[in-house]
Image (cartoon, rainbow, N blue to C red):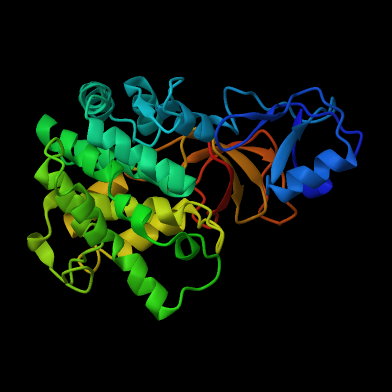
Length: 374
């Protein structure tokens, strides 16, 4: 099979891999002969590429590239319960373990810590009624915010482990990260779903989600006060130009400073109706360049060492036009991994198909974009 841009797929081509939607539901099963109607629908829901049967193409192993894995991680992390409350969600520890660990640099301590701490955290959180009901409210109103909340919790735990937080701190951090945007449930839907530039008045309303979320949770005795502070403070900045209270530096709680980084990073690398996701390389560069301005500088340094923007198995496009698969990530140099070329570009600097190269040794070549995240 081969991976093809949807613009190049033709009626009569055979689908080689099942297409799932963002919630893991099957849209088209592998083996289907695609029609013009199928192709029109796939384009309408903005799926960029699909796998097509092609005996002459380079075989891409499912163990290396799994185009649905990110959606499946999200779907598996919070699953709908089959009971009378269709909006209820449940937590499963093993899924946040596997999902978060793929973003970690290859350090045994971090991986073992993630496994142990997240298992304990999720086993406790899933019994907190106000956390579960709040997550249900987020999912019902806006699936993107729900998915973003899960991602931010994952990135926050990764950074928290890197910063050697204790078990109680990580527990509170996870709750606060999961609920950091709960106030958006109380923002008018027409503003939340707007795809064009927000007017100043609309942006001021959006900014109210921090105080509204804090007020929403204020009376919930089973949610730690420090988690509620995350909801209130995650848009504060180190230079004091954040909101809602313009506090600065260490006056912002430690856990809020962690979630601030995770929040912006996930927002940058995610597609939104009004803009495409930026390359993880650019997202990390943005975080680094805003150390001690928007973000805590020491935390930014820890984040850059902990996060792997291109996990092993990610399909990437290089600046010379080559298409490659990430095969290894170097500790402290995660932005320049080792890759294997699967499709040669037309540049004079293009590499040979099948060649494995370290981008540490080719400083003139950078990763331009992600084709598919492993």
